[in-house]
Amino acid sequence: MKILVTGGLGFIGSHTAVELQNQGFDVVIVDDLSNSSLDVLDGISRITGKTPIFEKLDLREKNTVQNFFKRHSDISGVIHFAASKAVGESVENPLMYYENNISSLVYLLQELEKKGNANFIFSSSCTVYGQAEKMPITEDAPVQQAISPYGNTKQIGEEIIKDVVKVSDINAVLLRYFNPIGAHPSAEIGELPIGVPQNLVPFITQTGIGLRQELSVFGDDYPTPDGTCIRDYIHVVDLAKAHVVALRRLLEKKNVEKTEVFNVGTGKGSSVLEVIHAFEKVSQQKLPYKIVGRREGDVISAYANTDKANKVLGWKAESTLEEALSSAWKWEQKIRKAIKVNS
Ligand code: NAD
Ligand code: WQD
Image (cartoon, rainbow, N blue to C red; front, side, top):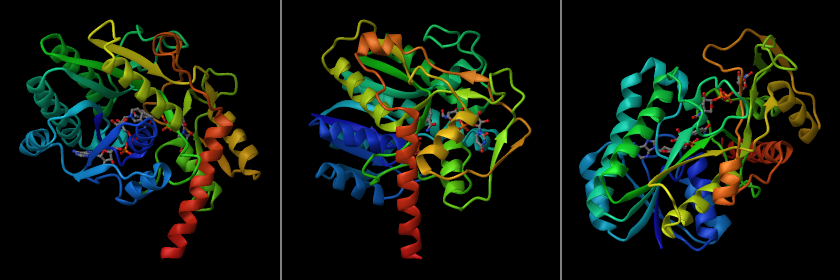
């Protein structure tokens, strides 16, 4: 069965491509390589023993998307990861984000609407909840006014999908990811941030390896037990597996609503200092860090209630924070060695 994975050479898409191939699906990846490299395809092949079909294409080009579906009329499901995801960049350049994250989605849905009997999985984000009133966050918590254009593209994306599903033969699952971290345990694929990482874990591992002098902890005066912000860090392999389970539910027509929404997290909140200490434990070294002021736009706390995914999908995150950090550390060590050898 052929599954289209858009953005399949990116961080989460590549891990999902691995899980799909491991479970016998035929994977077709499209990616414009704007935030990934072709080496990732080799990584997926080395892990699974199989090279997915790959087409380098830009989903912002409507004709290209139309032509793709003419050539691949036998796609049974689409998992749509392709998007731009840097929150700060989206504030600087909102139109770039609306064009990439919204146009691509619309063009894909137009083709699926024509095709009929289509299954669609969308990468949404816990960012849609903003600062939720109650922890842990359930799927029925209100969606709050987005703080950034990036966050807004996820909210608008969800609305577009719900509207289209109502009037077409498309069934959809919206997966709201919490904070994905880590890498494949083989260290063949992982996260590859371009430039200075904005996210906590890549900044920690790059500091651990000596690429950055020290980590800045953004605020220790929040109303949390140790004063630092709380997030739900989920191992990317667990997250990837959630996609396969959701896809099967759609393919087997087990969904009870035409659009279903699931939180994908561990259900456990960890503070920034807890993440630092867990990293120090797995890497057996001290991490240089200093406390600085709060980062604009950060919510105090966000962690998932995962009951719905547990009960309805029969999916549960398996890895601990330490296991996820350990895989991220193994990956960081491997890529830095590879970069040194090649330079
Ligand atoms: P990523 O940047 O690693 O992967 C996205 C991939 O899409 C990249 O390989 C990029 O080259 C490709 N791409 C972007 N625009 C494209 C286009 N127009 N045409 C074809 N390919 C295009 O990001 P990721 O971390 O793997 O995130 C995947 C999805 O999950 C995104 O939609 C993101 O918004 C969402 N998400 C990510 C996180 C996170 O923290 N990483 C959290 C919640 C949601
Ligand atoms: C985690 C915690 C920071 C870096 C972002 C996006 C969100 C989603 C996931 C896609 C926070 C602190 C961080 C650093 C720090 N992406 N931190 N020093 O902010 O929860 O979410 O990525 O949908 O939309 O906003 O993740 O990893 O940036 O931060 O102290 O150098 O680490 O303040 O408390 P965040 P993050």
